Length: 168
Image (cartoon, rainbow, N blue to C red; front, side):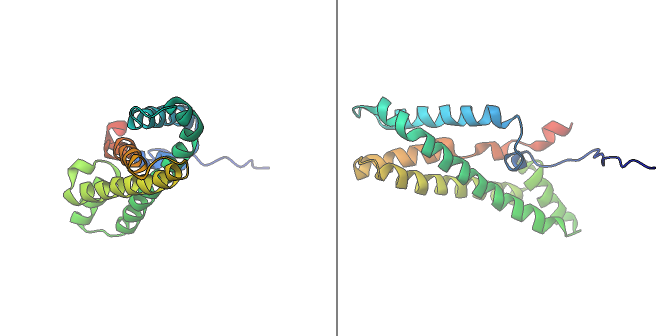
């Protein structure tokens, strides 16, 4: 009787930004770090508002969840571009694919698509956080200021880290 062996994957390379799609022990570090960054930026964006510590304690977890959802939106754009272009065999298209997946600085188009994914995530962060913060009763100006600070400071700039650094 033959026993079935599990398939082994050797030399599997995937872009660093795809780690968000695979729950792992890395999330045990990412979630608290993301929460802490969101809380610090929210606290900073509130300026001299009274009870900002209490405000942050009550609302940071919602903002953190909105940030993760926004990061998924940006990575979905990258994944869609990466998969749709991967099927082409042309030399310049493969340069774009390499730029999207492994080094955004190696291709102008790859960099622009990565920048668009970061901008999409930032826009989603702004829209979701503005909606969350408006419901708390802050003024319209303060809500917009805080949402903008959160969008600019917490956008997923990690998409720009070249994945090829892991594979060298």
